[in-house]
Image (cartoon, rainbow over all chains, first blue to last red; front, side):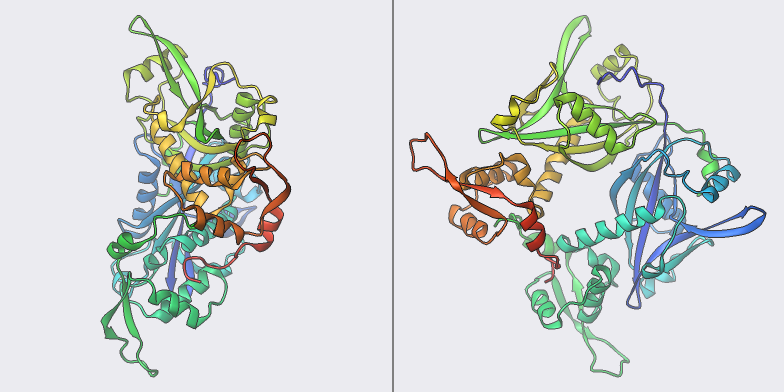
Length: 249
Length: 249
């Protein structure tokens, strides 16, 4: 049965899909592409995840980085593969999806997709430097109810993978400006995890993290007491993190 | 560029590869398939991961479960997807791999593989019930130095993924018999993590785990003081595990 000869006539299409998260003004956002088409004679619009078919000469990570570069103009974005999905009917469950595929000339075949999530720091400095493709926009995560194809499942799996990773790795800092206040940091975690954290406990935890470092600068132009700015040091984190077994040690 | 039309002629092969771990007599083992061929006129043997091309009518998890069923006769094995790999030359780096592919009639095309790791409880009860395919054998993980294709990389990534998951999820119990001693449990963690754990600390941690439950039974026929048997209760684990943020709370 493990005879690869039997199956050698099989062909699949392989794509990458990217769930790009950004954090701004206390909200978690996701980059989505508007899909427009004539459907039953009427203009129809909905949203999909950005993605593309993988080219023969590139590996999967390269394809995902290419999609992100085309979307945002940015290189070196935090990118993490979290799933491969190959349910045979994944693109063909809804009439409007089949109609769209016909209109773009997509062959009716199984497309195995490899899903990535990505974290973008929507920094005031950076936002001027990156230009989104015209049909791509940030949408608040809490407002996403429906997407094309099986993209709603992929989006939900990405959120789950992001939450899991956030529990164990300091990836939250990828979503913050390079200098941030502890309130911003707490808000970020609360928004992604969907639950409120106790401020005192949170600050106590942070004070035990030698890689979250106060800098000689405070907020400016605020009506409340200006908050201290902090930076995250990846170098200190890598030196000090526990290499031991958290589950048992 | 997110125009899928341009690429619509592309075809890939998609496979699944399985890294199947089993724990026995204090050793972590992996199931490998022997590959035999004539290479430059001489019989040549080496080892590869079990795997197969995905069929058009099955999804990826189904394909991986099918491969495991064919290998071992077992259903319902713990199976976890951990990576998709599509580096274009991944099957074509070594002459002997290319020769083998020619001999089995495999077309020279890019094969994107989706990698799974799997945990099997090599229980005395079970081992009589499952029968391995003839060319498949358990090999101690510590002795694996080279595998066919890019399987050594996949194997190393699986080990890393297993270690990561072991730190945060109680998957170690999948590898143990249903009743086990605390020494067996500690040994399992030590072997997988590749480091020694302090016995007192370890037992203290375990005593705080309401889901590791002593039963009314001890070891028999041992020369040392018979050790207490324990079971793992998934139900109690799911009730009591922290749902909070470990990284910050």
